Image (cartoon, rainbow, N blue to C red; front, side, top):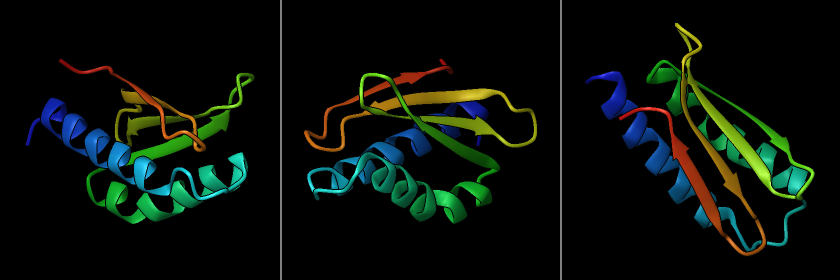
Length: 92
């Protein structure tokens, strides 16, 4: 599978998991940690890594990268209360 195809598939699955976790009254930090923990093993199998932070706008930003090159795959801003997601793919 190409990097672009892997990126699109995994970022889509990450969006699905973020939607599933949204609206569960988790703190921003707990939401960030739970999603990162849930996805860690799967991402590792696909040669990817996930980092996250809480932005000044009180949304959680996830950054998905390829482990071998540190190349950006996608970034995703999530409002864990409303479930609103904005994903930006770095691939084609």
